Image 1 (cartoon, one colour):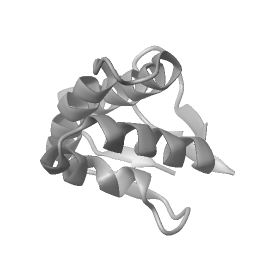
Image 2: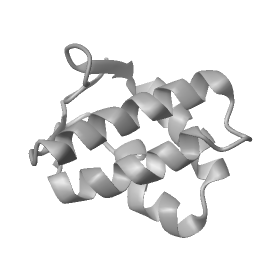
Image 3: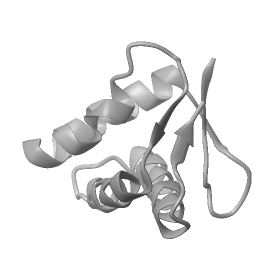
Length: 103
C-alpha cells in the first residue's frame, strides 16, 4: 500500500509506498532545522493510511521547506529527487489554490 499524492505537475498523482515516504521523512529530518521539520513532519509521520489534505497555504510553505531539504548538500541524490517531486506537487497545489491531497 502507499500514497497517491495529488498535483504532480507533469503527470497523474505521485505514488509512493508508506515505507518510502517514512524513509524520506527521516532524511529530511536530518537536513532541516527543527522549526522547518516541525512544519512538514505531519506528512511523514502518519499513524494511519487514512487520506488527508493539506491546505493550499500550508502546501506553499511545505513546498519551500521541501525544496530547501532537496537542495541540501547532505541529502542523498535519490532522496533529493523524491523531496523535490513532493515540493513541486505541493507548490502546484498552492499555485492553483487547492488542497494538496494524500490518499
